[in-house]
Amino acid sequence: MGVIMPSGTYECFNSNCGLYFFGTHSHDSVWHLAISAVSFHQIPPKFPTFIGAGLSGYNYLLDLILYGGSVLGISPLILFFKIIPIVWFVTFTAMALLFVKKVNSSSLFAALFLFLLYFCGSFSYIIRLLNEGTIIGSVALLSMQPPLMLSNLQYAISLIILLGIIVILKNGRIRWRTAFMLAFLLIVSVGYKFYAGIVCYILILSFLFVRFIKVKSQSKRLIFTYVGLFISCCFFVSILVFYDPFAPSNKAGALHFVPLATVHPLFEDPHLLSMPEIVQARYFLQEQHKFSIRLLGIESISMVMYIVLNFGVRIFGLLYVGYLCFKRKISDLDISIMFTIGVSLFLATFFVQSGVWWNTVQFLYYSMFLSTIFLAQFLYALINKTKWNMIFVIGIIVISLPSAIDVMNSFFFTKPGTYIPEAELQALQVLKTQHKDGTVYAPLYQVNNKLEHTSPFALFRNDDTAYVAAFSSHPVYYADEIQMALLNIPYKARKDKIIKGDCSFLNEIQYVYALKNIQSDPGLECVYSHADRFISFYENTDVILYKKKD
Image (cartoon, rainbow, N blue to C red; front, side):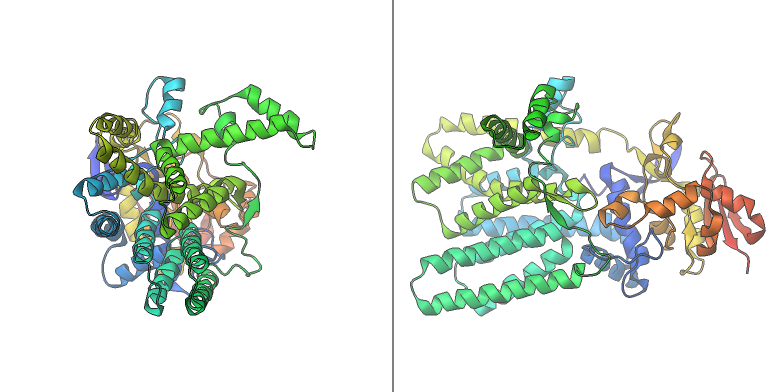
């Protein structure tokens, strides 16, 4: 809870007063606020920071809920950072305990499972220790871990849905009422997160297939077939509704087969393992364009190391499943979960995504989450076998904790690095009162604006974000390139036009959000050179607001 709830709070640090944000919330969460503030004033929804583009190929169900809250008079800021996290914590814990009740009613197993769900981490701290001699800053090196779940609220909510599906499947009996419940949860998972929808679909379909293979009754096989077809129809219709994949301009989220593209940076990045000899050997062997045992060995070892470092102690859970298979004690649901883990891991390591290519790593999050189920079962089985195994269990728990310690250091003992200053908040509030259809030009993000300044950084200095759209409720002409790239918005031509001083873009804007404390901005230079077209209607220490003359 400490990962999300302190963000979006008005505070003062060393006389720097404003709205503060921790970690990725300064970018990712502000983006959701921007969508809820701007996108749903028309149908289809519009892209909040690139005027003229639609918001397609994006999972905006959470943002729609935020918008609905604003219509009811609930501040999206309060809803996102305060209310939803509390509801999530209660619901997630309750769903986890409901799953525990289906698997093992022991309070010890419940404690183990909950502890691992919230605090189990990767072995990224080993890399940090080898390179820097400290574990601080290690949690961000590899894939996102449970202590950071709430830094991605859509992902955190999707885990409740995934647990709900597992609980339903654990009951074992598939009826039409069950099918409708599964279909509803699947549709919601697609709306919350594309990756979650695929994972949930794989889990449900694989379970139905396992049951289809095992049952002998033709009538029951027919039921599983019809349910599978119904679930598949719901899945593909929800993809069409939320993502419109056949739109001519919509290539966002498209997957491309590029084996181990997300694995290779582990050995190429100087901040990670950095093994130049191995990398050079791999490139040399790949250029031969023929099968090589040595290349296969390099790639296999790379894959194993990637899995072990990311999964951390959860790797014991995967090994435990192998033991259950050997003993023939594995259930239909266990088979389905293991299959889903395998497919998700395959998607995360053998595919890249259009736009932000490495975003397929999010499939890995679900693999690690599901493997926690088996790790809890493994540790519980060890404890029940002999009391001496408790030493081993404690050891496993201890080596899983550094990620949680690093997160606690970042969010509880380090002052926040980004904030929207009080003066900007006042200017944004004034801008919010203007006509909502007016497009705003805000200065382009420049890395140089961060130079010669110390933490806490004003948000415009720290990152390229959608905060002007989020807090003014106006669409912005150009901002947040990461989201543009992620959704394949053709932004480069527009950026080039601004940078080259082509002032024709002034015909497409109605308002100007001019920051005073920045280096020269080519867009603002256009505004100043055409001062006869604009009038200033608000000014304070940090901002001047302009609007076009009637």
